[in-house]
Amino acid sequence: MEKVLKLKRIYAKYEPEVAERLLKTIESSTEGLSAICKMDEEFPAVGTIYYWKSRHPEFLEGFMRAKLKQTEHMGLAAEDIIEQALDNPRVILDRGGERIDPAFVTLIQMKLDVVKWKAERLFPGTFCKDAKAHLDEKVTGPLVIHLAIPKDEKGE
Image (tube, rainbow, N blue to C red):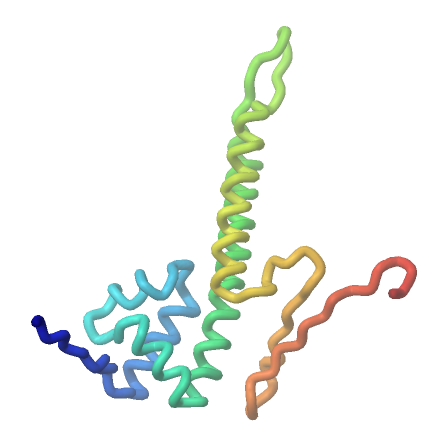
């Protein structure tokens, strides 16, 4: 009969300097955690990040702030896609005239959908149709995120 070895998961020790660099990288990147963890050999594995979040409230707060700022970068990426499309639209000739290629419009919409999808996974509620997340930058205590869902025209 074979013995089954149970391995205990070992997490990297929490180091505030590494955590701070990691958070700065998260907030300035549009990549997911797996890719970010591979950017620097001192960055911990994804599992360690979740462990740190559960054990260090200051890291959890910083992580949430970084993720919110990361989604702002996603919004800027969406704006860049639109600007590039407006600066260089793909035009086709149509009966002696010009018009924008419908396939080009579809491609731009698909790119925007991908950016919105990624941002929604990075910080849920960011690109929700009706919900708006707001981070109060002046708060020095616990992280507070205000979620506002507008009422419909009837006030309900």
